[in-house]
Amino acid sequence: MEESISINKFISDTGYCSRREADDLIVAGRVLLNGRKAKPGNRVKPGDEVEVDGSLITRKQKEKPVYILLNKPVGITTTTEEHVAGNIISFLNYPKRVFPIGRLDKDSEGLILLTNDGDIVNKVLRAGNAHEKEYQVRVNKPIGPGFVDQMEKGIPILDTVTLPCKVRVTGKQQFTIILTQGLNRQIRRMCEYLGYEVTALRRVRFMHLTIGNLAIGKWRMLSPVELEKLNAAIEDSSGLPVKIKRIKPERAPKIKKAPKEAPVEKETVKAKARPAAKPVGKMEKEPAKKGSYKAFRQKGRQR
Image (cartoon, rainbow, N blue to C red; front, side, top):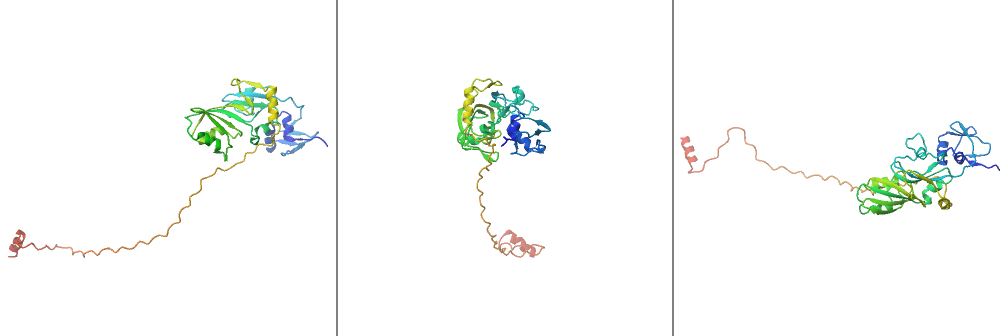
């Protein structure tokens, strides 16, 4: 039986891009297999032709894997798109094609790995494999009571609830956090949910790899010992693509409104009988008391 290989791995092995990027190209219809649009899951056999954007690509002799540890500065974007200003590939300026494992947002700094080995990317990144990432964080105001418990239990962001994590306060406005997942701007969103703004964020550890004394903007190759530990750590890890399970945050139960009561008929109150109005005209004068000056005058007029 002829040896075959998945089309995304074939493209990755040519050095054209990572497996994940190859999947995106296939879904976008930019890859042809023997003149027909390729589909995810297609396999390439010896003699097959693969084209990307109209250009024929061939499988090269697999190069020696490269593993680079970079201390990324703030302002560098973790993307392989070299037309993007401040992209990590142009900043690194490595002579061979490499791509980052995971992301570290533009406003953050610290440890990030780059490699040309597409086989390890999903194994390293998959949250289910529980590979730890440690960060040092500074926020805009003193950390209040309950902050640690809420962060560790999980915060509802991005239509899901973050996985349990480890948090340790290291200063009035500083803490370290260890995550096993990597949602978009996760730490910043978690803090924002609790009313804090992140003013500085630095990744200091990725699995067993640490930033150490490596200066910001500098990089180095992994040592043989570090590489051996990395391969041992991902040996039993699943290489399936990363999928994020969306969980809707729990909402407070709705309070049932009390049934409306039937309107109570108001008893008609009969107006009290008022004395009949006197006819308009000269008002009748009340008779004066006998013996008074007024009575004396009225008597005189009658005469």
